[in-house]
Image (cartoon, rainbow, N blue to C red; front, side, top):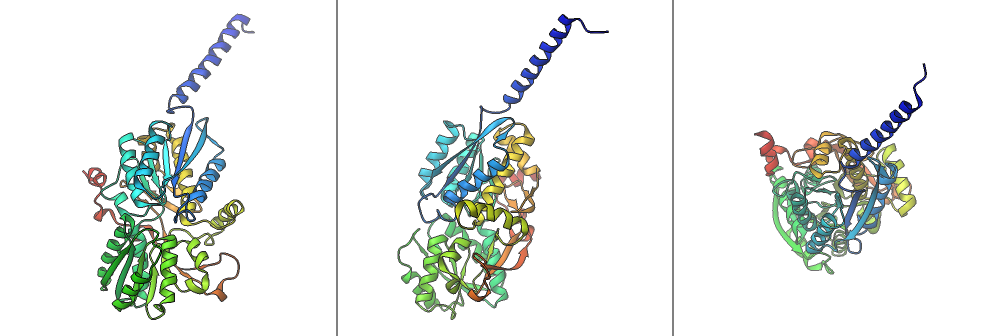
Length: 410
């Protein structure tokens, strides 16, 4: 028997209305008509090459690969330059969170900036996903329910460098670091590890960010007689410190160990000057077929291989969007909890997990820079000496000073 036309039209109308109401309910789970991702980075200073526009492009790639939408709404990407100043970074983050509806901020490749943004994220219940800053304080005293520390930290980097150098016979250390949160945290972590390995730190000196002349600092390190000079700085500061060490004949009489070294730095130095350096890294583009495939896509856009910050930005944005999709909302606390419940499995990390303190635990790699004759093609710079399992690389929860860890145990 056929259905009366009037009844059929009524049912059809109710069906359309039901679909509309369902769509409206789904939309109400989002804070507004878009999911907004912000990349807050050094776009113009000494850290720009290892993050900056490259991090923005990596985030754009992640959004494109996700389909440009989540929960039926477009994903918008915004970016800003923190100029390596905590007050500027905090001001931009406050504007993004409060006025512009940004749901999650990524990168923050300066520890002082990252620490200022974490405090705002805690207050606003928004996401702060640090893929560029290094200080382990971000998952200790400064940890927040809606913050994630993704790519690396001073603990893991110092741990890997200390282990690698001790195997090469390093016993006495001089620390040459940058004079702000990152350098001080790195120096503290390295001092801890050197002591555990029965070594000794016999001196230290700190220089301004983006120092113009390293001669006095390098001469102090050289005069110490330490067999290892550890650099607790990054990018152009590291490059210039290495060049000064070469100029003053520090190496090979004394071993120079960069605790935070990017592939961009090796490229800037050249293999002739960088060869033999051993350090820990969270990513190397030429390690697996998957990392090579993604890095070559990135290279097509940026004409250089990605740093671990840039690779981490892609992975973190992707993981965030997956969590939004799974949670059915862009609410900060809900998405943060979902991110911690989901494993990270991609070209950047396999079996990665985000702990209660916000630390994304994944394998790190101890690498050595190749000699010029060993490099077979452009950007073929590292020999991977060993894999450092995530639970051995990063600070264990037993050492954590994060209040969230204690709360989770109670």
